[in-house]
Image (cartoon, rainbow, N blue to C red; front, side):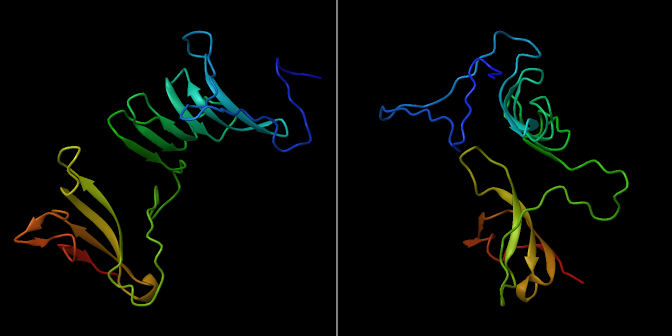
Length: 193
């Protein structure tokens, strides 16, 4: 029994194929809600066995684009892209428009000690890999200048990265006196142990 204006049911894994046959032309699906309003969302809703699992699309009440794992597009458990380009990730995320990237972990008032909100990894695991780093660059300068930065990084201090230190790079890879400060240019290092 059909439950929608268009209801496709089949034992095939691929139910629909929409294909453009014109070279150098876009191919897209348009979802258009009737008018502006807090409930006029436009999205694709993913279900499994009739149960809501996630959604991707436009959320009218927040005026944003969302990729969420939850029962409907109004959820904030996932990725939220604000109109100005700010991105929020995590659980119950409403990014501050002044933050280009905002990450929030699962709320827990009982967690003590080190709490990880995000991880950045350089997948190196070998002998003689001392000095290998995984870091974050903090950049300044114009939009076309990428050599004006300072950084902070984890640094391998033993084979297989079995000991990890922390190193700071002021001045990024600017050239001072003909020498790049990026290579071996860490100015402060906190060693493991």
